[in-house]
Length: 142
Image 1 (cartoon, rainbow, N blue to C red):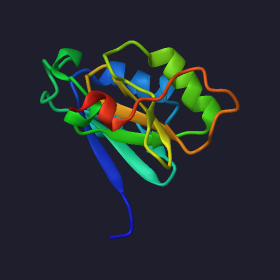
Image 2 (cartoon, rainbow, N blue to C red):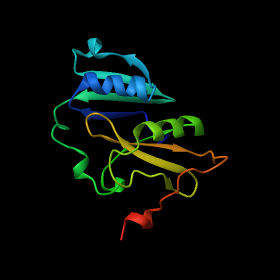
Image 3 (cartoon, one colour):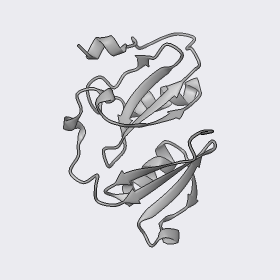
């Protein structure tokens, strides 16, 4: 295997998630819902394609179903330090133990899209000044 080609994400509100992935995460929209009979939207980020699919299987899930981010599969995006900090400021407070986490080689912060899909943004860049304390896996997993 050479890498990830694409990721499909189940959503229960395609319009809200399309806006979130386009406007908040700033992914590039390649094909909109009109290209897929209103049920899908396709984005690119780097060399990876992310497809949102309104299948109904995400319906009913919410942040109360998560005690720790590692309890749920997720999609991670890499960002530079400025983008990483901007997203943390905008999306903090959704659920306990969002981070940021010290993952040794990189730092990560978890958040939810409008359908409750767990996402992570990571950065390999160290901050000039650290305003937030970092969690580790051992801080939240007994």
